Amino acid sequence: MRAPRPCKRVPSVGMIALAMVVFGLALAAGGSAQTMPKLPADFRFAAKGSPGTVLFSHRTHVNPEQPNCTTCHPGLFSILRPGTTANGLAMSHKQMQGGEACGACHNGKAAFAPTQGDKCMTCHRAVAS
Ligand code: HEC
Ligand code: HEC
Ligand code: HEC
Image (cartoon, rainbow, N blue to C red; front, side):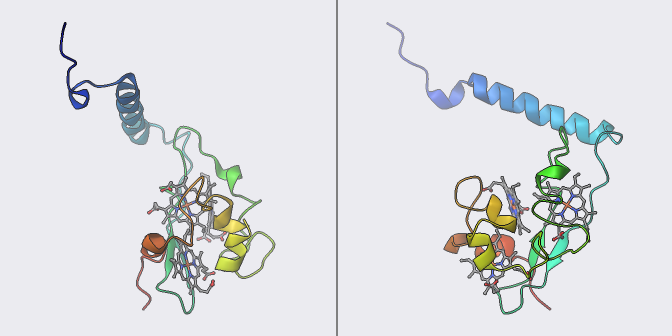
């Protein structure tokens, strides 16, 4: 009987699919200017009294294969009133924990939660000046 080979040497179907996706993204990034809208610059929320300015990056939130602008605009964030919740209120952890704004996804299920002690600086990463 053949001994099983160590798993980490055998690329699984999942790994191959992932490699293809990554390769596809690299190609798309190089040549799909017409499908991918120009993304706005990183947005900084002042986050007064917090551990630091909150930086939001479209680059890490938009899938270049399917630019999903309407996932967030205007339902979660109005482009017309930047830095607030969709209904124009000041953004806060209370709002997010109620499932609004970033909290629609950053709820500990779809993405890490704002209450996770090890994640504070992932969002509050730009040091306030
Ligand atoms: C998912 C991203 C995210 C994470 C993770 C996060 N924050 Fe925040 N935080 C924000 C946003 C967005 C604001 C509001 C910014 C604004 O409107 O200026 C904010 C605001 C704050 C404020 C200002 C008062 C308030 O309640 O809104 C404090 C204090 C704060 N954060 C502390 C923390 C601490 C401590 C952690 C870790 C336990 C943390 N944050 C993790 C995004 C995050
Ligand atoms: C994951 C959520 C999310 C997605 C998806 C998203 N945005 Fe945004 N967008 C934001 C947030 C957060 C801001 C920060 C300001 C605010 O509160 O409106 C913003 C701000 C903007 C702004 C205003 C920029 C500024 O500095 O005032 C524009 C323009 C914009 N987005 C365009 C787009 C386009 C085009 C797409 C699709 C390619 C897109 N967004 C997808 C969350 C998102
Ligand atoms: C439509 C869903 C969605 C919304 C809305 C959203 N995020 Fe995210 N975000 C994600 C997902 C999914 C990830 C990656 C998964 C993970 O790391 O848990 C992520 C990752 C991140 C990261 C780590 C990657 C990076 O950019 O460095 C930060 C920081 C972040 N989000 C901040 C925010 C802030 C601040 C807001 C609100 C202004 C926000 N996100 C709103 C879905 C969302």
